[in-house]
Length: 257
Image 1 (spheres, rainbow, N blue to C red):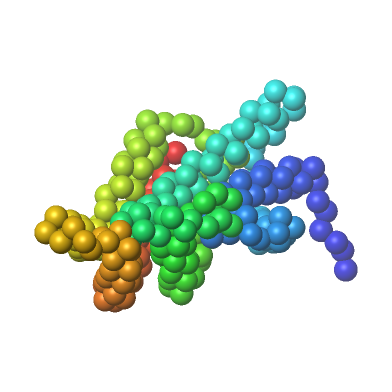
Image 2 (spheres, rainbow, N blue to C red):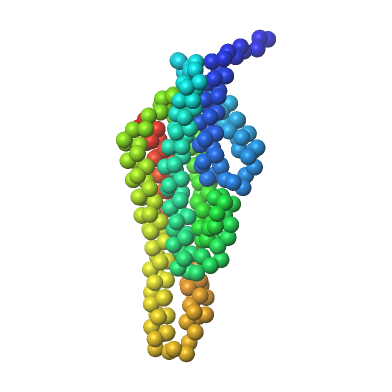
């Protein structure tokens, strides 16, 4: 039995594939969460690279100088960064909606450390984020992302990335869409809490003896949680559509390059 002969071209192709996969793996919140050990993420990137390697076309020309090598490295890093950035914008809309809800409900005073970002995040942001992650894996969203990543090597060979105008405009539109999605997700609770605060304000003016600050916190928290439970049935299909929207934007950005 003869072992396959791996030339320097094979090793260089493996390196470029590993570089792009690693950037996307470490940037996507689903796979690159800070709570996961770095060794696990490196191992996942290695396994994913080995699986994709037979389908990746080998580059015709390899860099033979230090400058050329740096140019290809920067190209692969920018490719992974651009593809992951569009996905992170849409996912951040869920966390932004949670911040809107938590601010009105009074949960921002009890901000906790978010292991995903390393910063402070409200309880509602973490809850909606975890629900989105569960929906993402339940509808096999990770399969769509892996297919898109494999397709990116067919459409964008190593050192083939160019930062064109359509890609920049797509990122700008997705970033603007992030705020629209956040408002759509949080609108029912925001409207209800606005009416609740309006009613409490009227009570404070008519009955000054009532401590509205102490009464308002449990009322807003209870009302917000009740409305969140009522709207969860309608919220789940919206989040399913958001996950599919992420995969569509990823494929569109790959085709634009």
